[in-house]
Amino acid sequence: MPCPDGARLATRVWRPTRPGRWPLLLMRQPYGRAIASTVTYAHPRWYASQGYAVAVQDVRGRGDSTGEFRGFTQEAADGAVALAWVRSLPYVNGRVGTYGFSYQGLSQLLLSPGSPLPDALAPAMAGLDERLHWASEGGAHWWALGLGWALQLAAETVRRAGDETAWRRLRLSLEGGTFLRDGLALLEQHDPGGMGLGWLRLDPANPIGWRRHEPPEGLLRQPMLLVGGWHDPHLSGVLDLRARAHAAGGAPWLRIGAWSHLNWAGGLDRLQLAFFDRHLRDRDGLETHPREAVADLGAGSWQSLAAGGCDQPSWALRSQGLAAIDAGEGRLLAGGEGGGVVWLVHDPWRPAPGRGGHLGLDAGLVARTDLDARADVACFTSVPLTGPLQLAGRPELELELSSDQDGFDLCGALSVIRQGTAWQLSTGVLRSLGPHCRRRQRRRLSLQPLVTTLAAGEQLRLSLAASAWPQIAVNPGSGDCPLGPVGPGHRVITLELQLADACLRLLPLDSRAD
Image 1 (cartoon, rainbow, N blue to C red):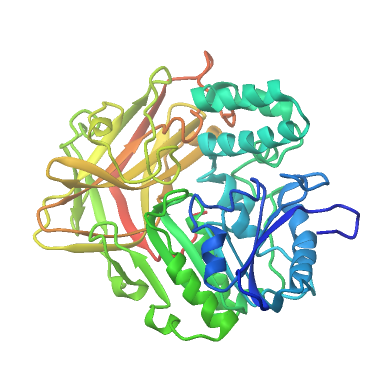
Image 2: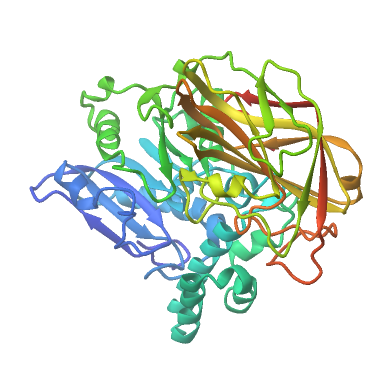
């Protein structure tokens, strides 16, 4: 595909074997067009067998496309050219839809002002705010995920430059896990102008310098299928897109599965086909699907988003001071009165690990009974339920706490205890830096949204720690923003948690966590 500035974007097209003119599905991605996101979607040949042409394009400066890769900033202009170009192909009937997840999700939403819009789009696991939807949360950079993705992009940069030695060095650091220690230096050496390194150089607690993209007017009112996962780091971006589409007068379709970023447990190609059949081919079939549906993490079934109801309980926290020593001592009380003080001591020599959830390299539902047994993790557990309880929303903990250092992290996990095992459902992080950390203040910790049903006899547990390595870098306690592994300057940090007015509650699913 020729661009006005002379760049040429390599594009592979699959099409039906029988003659004719067809609607086309467009995906634009930076990982090599031959892959075609088959880690999550059916192969383009399947869509071609259903009567679609499918075009998968290497974005500028990636794969076999010419030009310099500049990340999301390049996609509005090139995306507009791509839509016009595929519509002009002789075997295309003029109707075009877009699909793809992650980078391919956001690239669908970035178009030059005034350019023609796709007839339908299906962005998955993406958002518009590079700070809140792509790189950080709670004032902390995504460390393992952010580094890993930035190094993947850097590897493509050095491959295109023909530097096999650098490529192998990057690959080995990812395979061996050493990137958690040396990844930042590798980025500075091999991709100093890269988007991932640029994010790590910005303050995750301050929106200044970060880009928040704005789709062209009218795009959010186009037929749209939004896709997210409870264990995906971009879920807040998907929920933000849903809210913005509704505010613009749109009526998007929504699916949130019990999925991580790369594991969709069977995918949604049948629904996606019905969606495009309706909006690109005027066919029936989509009406048999609910417009908005989410997976219940506990019941394992799909349900209407509205089925969760609005009345959710809140919980108080109580302890006699031993919640960090005895995992069963702290209480999570529905409608009760909390109280007590708990001290959490964070030793940087053995930081509490992060596991699973939406920020883990092992993302998903995981057991954490052994983590809760650590003496640097405070646990608050409910009594066994007398009947089923559905939780639908974004958990938020509000409590007073202080630190003996100029920086601390508070990392939370919400779990269900089932037959003696704690299964982690949702996690979140709050990072605080500066002298105010030493003052007793009321603070809020937001966790990943969820929908789950707890059965009779099961228990709900909130676990709190002062680190979640390597999901976020370990806080040094000095007031500086951490950008690396633990070093000799990291301090022991003691947190004092005041439980008298602490409250765990559920906010609406589309409420913002910043």
